[in-house]
Image (cartoon, rainbow, N blue to C red; front, top):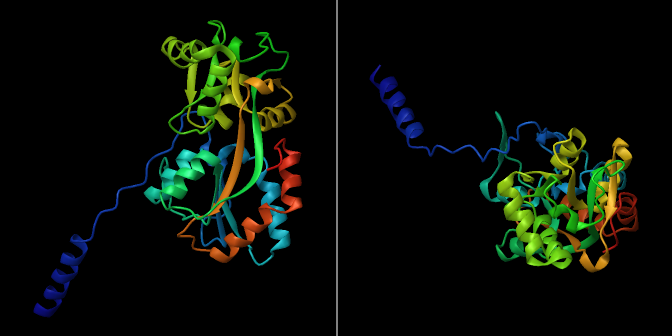
Length: 293
């Protein structure tokens, strides 16, 4: 009996001294199904991809084509959340959606060049490759009831703007730079400070889901997005239109991909990086409105 008690006491001491791991940060967004950006079986996948959210429409075709070329990669799990959220997920070791906790470590990280540079400098990813580009546009309701012709119109007090949050979404900085090109720092201040305070600019946490939802529901009148998103939503819903931004006021995104240094499936990751540079992958991105690298 003494031996049993001593053994139980030892086990209790070992358990009590183990560190208690905090749950990863919560990315639950009221009214938005963030799990729409979590695709595949997270249990024992052969490849894990973290891709910037604006690529969500291209990922199903891309992954299917990759698996046809590499049938040995039977299970692919991927996320298409904002790049800042994906980066934090890598460093925090996971993410929480309400009561669901995901701790999959990625093999591949896809993001804009600026964000990728930060992750390279932080030692999180290896040398990246470029595979696509994009430009900005304005998403509005079909028929353009507010008669929005350009970025300057987003500064009007009667226009409710869905604006990506600079804290998480890389597109926000490029949009702000375009505001300055179109109407100087006064336009940027009006949209990002004055109208935020007035409630006529509302910041998103996941713009590729929230902006079209808000426009369709009437919560917002317009939202600056990548043109690929506006074109896709126009076809998908039939209720959204695209206002193009002239080149002199526009910004270009350069999309890059890199191996995560702690990739658990390095062989599959390298194969996916090679596939991203193929003519087949570039044709898929072109189908969804993305430009060449």
